[in-house]
Image 1 (tube, rainbow over the protein chains, first blue to last red):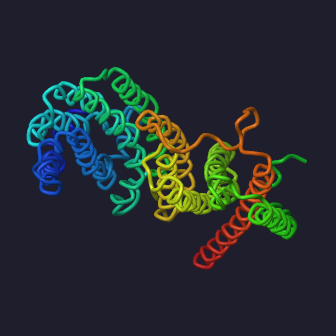
Image 2: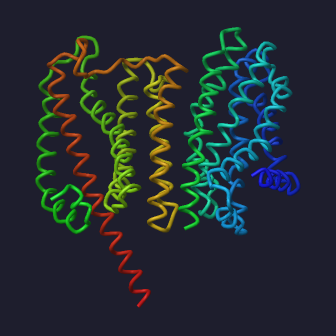
Length: 218
Length: 242
């Protein structure tokens, strides 16, 4: 499983595309928003938590179809499915490698973009914490969506349609954590809920995704 | 004879074709009585005026919109566990009806909310969760349409339905946390004192029963269509093989 993780990471980094693209997309969203709403830093600071979370979510979405699609096309998914590791474990590894190549860089880049959006100072620790805790859920939910649409040609749009409603709870708790942090309120509740969602998706969705992959490989 | 006998498409077709005319008539009767009673023979509310009558469409459609998903969840589980094709086709047949009911619920709500709350739309927990429920219906229908192979589509949509149910409930509570809303509490419940007044409640119950009958009728009708479509596909496939 670790070998598989290393292979996926190597592929993601060396083939380019997905890895840098999500980050660039995140940057562009954060840059475009001030043009849309105006340069007033009070307004920007108020909406920054939401923008950063929506941006992270969309950048995450961008690379989701690559989780299984490439392996499905060249047949390595069949080999991996017959390999002596459980398919659920495979899904978990795929989701983790997706997180390492999108969620983690996004988390690290977010404070810089927060600066651009004049996010209040108190909010930075909560920005990093909420993204760090919340983005794994995005990857796992996305892996489930990708496993449903892996057999469909050009399933990217359908994938977004399926996955975005599933992202709603994560988005709510994530953005709420930062907003409360910015206003100096207690952030424990949304942060705990965010962690609960991440752990829940981590525990349950690999099974659903593995079931979907089995159907798609039939 | 067990209940599962009707999972046989032939038996299902026979039973449903016998039941449909009765069901259609009963639906028309109950819904007609409920709506006419509600619209013409109830007094106007002293504060809301006649807009209160939107309740006779709004509440039943919202009720159906939620329970249609519940029905899809049950039939999807039956498909995954017992592999009865009729079951999953019923789920497929119910989805567009659920979507339509969600849309009706949202639109009638907007029409009522404009004069009452002074706004067409408010990011209120109930309204927002309904919008998201509509998105779930859309995704479910889109996944059905996107996959060519019938059994693959049935399996994948069933999995989506189950996961979607969990997330729909999760979203409901997340949204409650996010914004405490404007929408009033339940209008009808069996154990509470502050329900709507009996004058409004009796026709409302009639309308709900009418909508349930309407839903059953439509699902049967659409399931029959799906079964026929499946048969045509099988015939075409057989032609091609021969």
